[in-house]
Image (cartoon, rainbow, N blue to C red; front, side, top):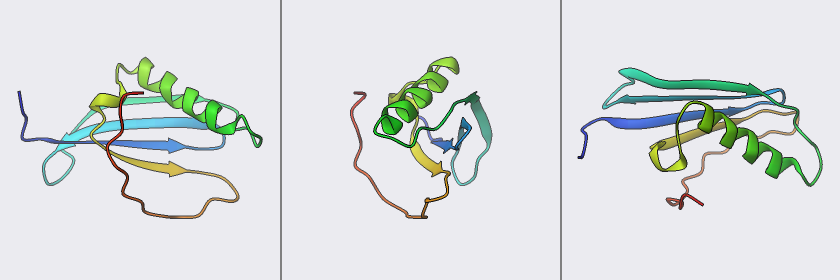
Length: 95
């Protein structure tokens, strides 16, 4: 069943925690549907991407979401060497 609501998910990947909020609304956010966070220790080596991915996956699981129902995703990544960039990415598979 198609809905007339837009779904948006915000992911904040900080240096000490991951926070996720998902909401719905057409022209503006009308309702927050899911919120979750988890403390984590950011790595600065080759394991960093895998550890960040696992932390995000754990929060999504904790709040009952999967990659297939996130809608538009907005991500924020913290750190000393972080730069602001806007990128439009293609739809991704659940894997």
